[in-house]
Each structure stands twice: as structure tokens, then as C-alpha cells.
Length: 111
Image (cartoon, rainbow, N blue to C red; front, side, top):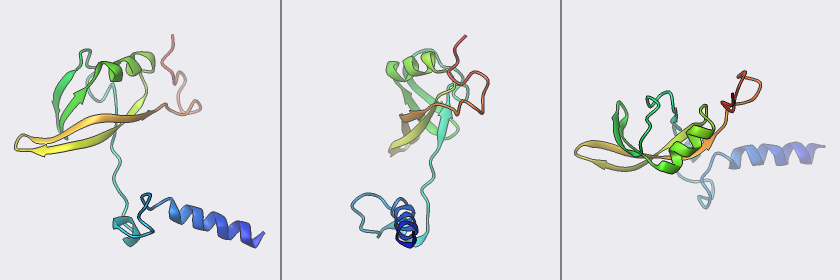
């Protein structure tokens, strides 16, 4: 039983470090990376692919991103920073997650 608790503790600790860091790097000092997520609603339910200016910077939305939102309107995408220019920071949408079924009446946005 004690070994199992130790193993769980080590797994939790190792989850805070990027792969290949060997437990070193910015997370080794107790810092956490900020993960910013956006929903279709937060980006104004845009309907066309393109590059849009928001308070956090420029966001490129693809047709594939929109297809996900059309199927799952409540999906939350992770913002991925791609560059920093004179015009501001550039982002694209990364992985998405669907809301927990218990937290919303209609999590998949189905009618």
C-alpha cells in the first residue's frame, strides 16, 4: 500500500514537468504555465476562417476549427502562441475539450 502511494505521488510530481526535462526547467521551480481556453462564444461566433484581432492578440481560425464548433458549439480550444510581431501576439487554436456532461444541460450543443 505504501509503495502505491509513493508511486502516485511521483506520478503527480512528474506530471508538472515537460517531457524530456528530467524534472528541470521552469516548472521545477514551482511555476505553472498558463493555459488559455476560448469558446466560440468568446470569439463572437465567427463564421468564416481567417485572422481576427482580439484583446489577447491575433487569432487565426481555420475551417477545421469552425467545423468543430459547428458540431460542438460549447467546445473550448486551447490558445497556442505562434509568434510575437510588431502588431502583437499571434495565436492559433490547439486541442479542444468538450464540457463535462454534468455541468451543462446540453454539452454537445445538440438540438
